[in-house]
Length: 450
Image (cartoon, rainbow, N blue to C red; front, side, top):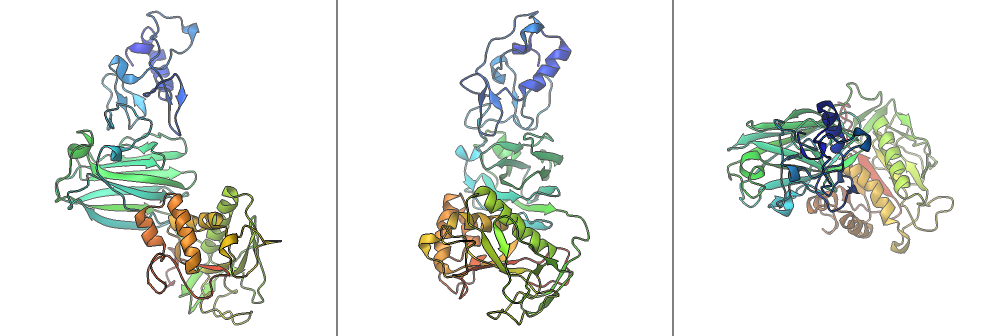
């Protein structure tokens, strides 16, 4: 930075201090006011006098534009003269912002984007309606290996602009290869300016709900999000997480109704859940099934530490196939991808939630939804069988937690009637006393069938 608050410092010190100011500079009303999940903000302060005493410490923070210095949103920093910046950005007339929300000033369509763990998914979209300048996808970035998001223009004049924020609006990626948030690593950037492809690779330390924005640099972003795209624009949006080849040693073979399980993994009890004996020794699943169950239970207990312990009653028997013994017949559970779990209750769970029809008055919908949401956001569950009346309560919780209309439509059979072939969460008879989750085939299990 060449002037303002760093004037009078030696050049080397100015460069060092400018890095510190990345965390301090933005628009605000009071010195060092913290933002929700964002950088610190300053009120302009006073510039250091020329030849200022270094012993006085760093100068007060100052908003970039007050001294003719621009804010680079995609780098999270003020610009030195001559610096390049993919996205200087302004939203609603502000050069800096507390949260990045172009939909506050533009027209946005709000679909959902499923990012499959250890897999790839593409969707083809367009701007043919002429009603929307931005497509804002609600998504969930799974932890583990890096996730690559790619937007490729397939028709029409299109310079794809790709932005990623957390659900609070903190910018995670805006066109430059910069880590704007400490728990998100940004790499392999292709900005899309002057190009037909934009892409970014994100690595997160914990699963992260995000918004992915797709629009156009020249016609929408550069005019300040007030323009529109040509209605001939079409694009393909692809997400991919590449996991280690070979996967686990376990393998789901065939279908859940007519299959087997090779090298099955025994599930053991853990915090918040007990694996119980139902008389058929059905303790086994694929490694992926066991991991998804344990991780979801851990997430539910962490978010709801006082929640009751539930029973995991049946997975598959060793080797898979038809579990013929036990108190009731199974029509599935043959290939290591199914599990029966009692519902979380708010009372009557001593020592743990029993298998019994659940009254709405004691149904712990908050904890149950946290469990389901873990699988749904990862696109891990093929089906979750739940009584229709209980679905209605869970639906209300999902709405309160911010599920989009597209997510609600895709995840729930409710409010459609019983028998409607829609929704991951759907009604099956005899599921008022437990829910049944069936996971997708693991990506490397080549003999697995849905």
